[in-house]
Length: 366
Ligand code: AMP
Image (spheres, rainbow, N blue to C red):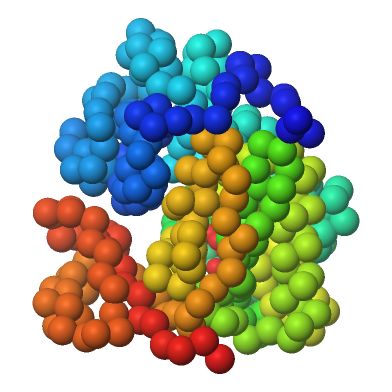
């Protein structure tokens, strides 16, 4: 019997034709839908904006805002379980959905990951290292945080930041008052700058019975605050690799987590420092599509469908590269390369900074 049965509404392992509801219809919802279809399962997408990337491959799409209670209820009743592709789902929508269906991963993971202050406090309470941090909500708290933490530091919004948005770096030369004026009225967190040698992430999965499988850590390189490449294997010693996987398992066990999670880590001479956790499939896990027999999308679908997990083992070395904005025009050339697997998201509007697709370049495992 499963060890953990905390969901308010329990469900049985999904079978052919059963439906997974996904909140959000972006590229992650699209790739989750493809993975579900490969297992004979269907997805219904709930997405406020029209014609999202997942609509091409999902069984049904519900176009409605997260404030539409009756649309949420109809959606929940049409599916066997609900999951999501992004963490900023309004609490009111979750309150309604929970009355009618199980949601995986459960709300605690959203509560912790939606707010950087709660997240860092939670991780420290588990005994994991983070950057030093302090809450900021006034000019006075900003100046006292600076005297406690010093500069270099990074001021971030507690909520709704992504891809480096809602962040500013502070140096000795920064004028705290000018910086405060830019963010006045927002709840912020000041983080000490971590002098890392490189950044890695672990993509982990946990099943309803508490089984855990982690993929090999990948090494991430950002450009303009957006993930540019993930390289597998990451530069890590054997003990660093073990640490990275054990701390990911520790977080997932503490949260009684069901599904795939991304854990972003800084590698420093003092050990691994957790930057943030994402309670969903993650851009830095896209390499698994061509490096593993069971990729992160199938792994997530298996977990929420109460299927057994894949073991996460990898058969190839991979470099994943994002196609951002006009990078998409490289697709035609990339398609001629026999070691490249293209993954395009079907987005017709090319905009700067927009994730249009990615590709995985595979080579023999070393
Ligand atoms: P985040 O939105 O928190 O993932 O931050 C985006 C990127 O900014 C990270 O991937 C790091 O490259 C950098 N960064 C964020 N926080 C810190 C920190 N405390 N120290 C050093 N670099 C950071």
